[in-house]
Length: 189
Image (cartoon, rainbow, N blue to C red):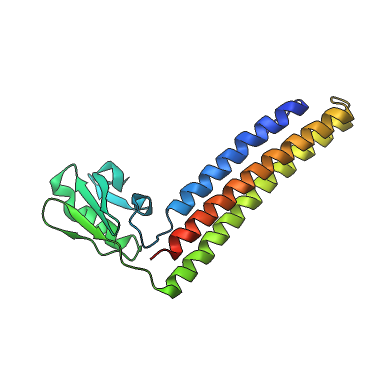
């Protein structure tokens, strides 16, 4: 972050915090719940045409029902490679194919597994909150440096610090909301 004046501190902090929020949203989407979501397959890489490519680049993914994901390969010759990639992705999923499409049933979670996943969700959310706080600390330090160098006034610093804190509170509330939504999704049966 390269802050040159007070008002831009909140703007730059907001942009960095938004990136942190999107990162957490992506990380939480990959946590498997009892409900089918194509986001849980984001980490799957398929060995296609001699290179590792994301699953969504070799197949169309859809969720026809709440406990099933269907992968429809663009190239039918890749069906075996896709099936092997899903099995070896260590997601606890057991795909099956009928020669045309791959069906990936999402098994129901046990109570013990739900608790483990909830801990992971809380850990990811806390990492996100810590990232947002780190961005706030960086912005506040830059503002204090600007004040010390007499580039901004004390009033400007105070306003900018308040603006950075407001942006921080908004993004932490956003992370809390993502965490709450994922927790309620985990507890659904």
